[in-house]
Length: 129
Image 1 (cartoon, rainbow, N blue to C red):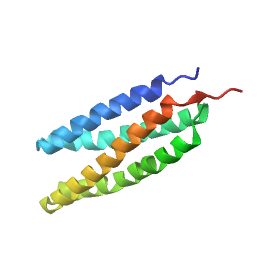
Image 2: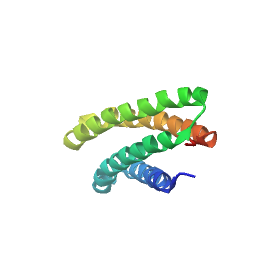
Image 3: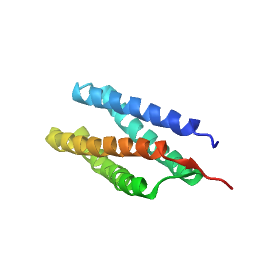
Image 4: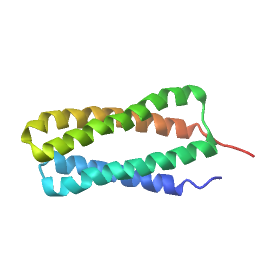
């Protein structure tokens, strides 16, 4: 069985950082949030790379993969407005509503991608040969 530990370690760490970054953002713990927000995005990128490696070692049902991939890609793309509005908010309070909206939309899509990804992994089979 291919090693999945790096993926799962990155995934769990990303989820923990995400929850902590959301908590610090919503409770206005700005100093900590300014570290955790970007760190979460970096770790999310690492998790995505490890996911791609995992996809190369497993076969997943095409119908489940077809449901998961649009959410996964949208989650990756919607990280860009979160980052952009976060940088804007760092400089101007006027961005607060925009940043919150970007974060909430991104969060819904990422949670859906996570759920469909776990569903997909549960039906995955290790590639042979």
